[in-house]
Length: 154
Image 1 (tube, one colour):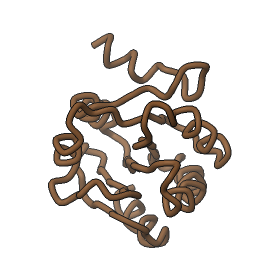
Image 2 (image 1 turned 30 degrees about the horizontal axis):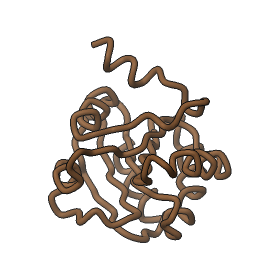
Image 3 (image 1 turned 90 degrees about the vertical axis):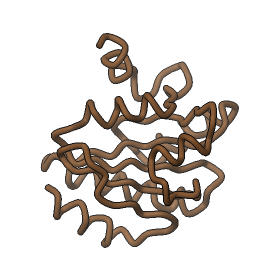
Image 4 (image 1 turned 90 degrees about the horizontal axis):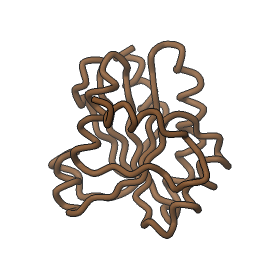
C-alpha cells in the first residue's frame, strides 16, 4: 500500500526525472483514480500532433477539473528526453500527474492498455468513474469530440 501511495506523492515537477510507469504501475494508477473521470494522454516531445494537443488538453482539464475530471499525461520519450518532456509540460502549463512510460516490453505494455492500439501517438484513453476504459482516441483528435465524451461521463 505504501508503494502505491508513494507513486502518487511524487512531485509533479522536481529535480529528478519524471516518475516512470510500466504495465503494473499503470494498472495501479487506474485503480487509485476510481471515482473520477480520467483521460490518460500518451504523448512524446518528438510528436508534433501531441504538442498541438497538450495545451488544448491542459485547458480542458482546467475547465472540467471541478466536475471530477482529471488529465494524466504519460510521456513515451526515452529516458534521455525526460528533461525535454518536463520542459514541454511546463511550457504548456500541464498540471496534474505526469509520468514517463518505461516498459520492459513495449508490445506487452501497449496491449495492456488497449489491444487495438498499435502504439501510435498521440493516444488518449478515457476511463469512467468505475475505472473502466470507455473510449480510445488514437491519432489526432478533435477536442470537441473528446470533451463531449468526457461530459457524458461526468
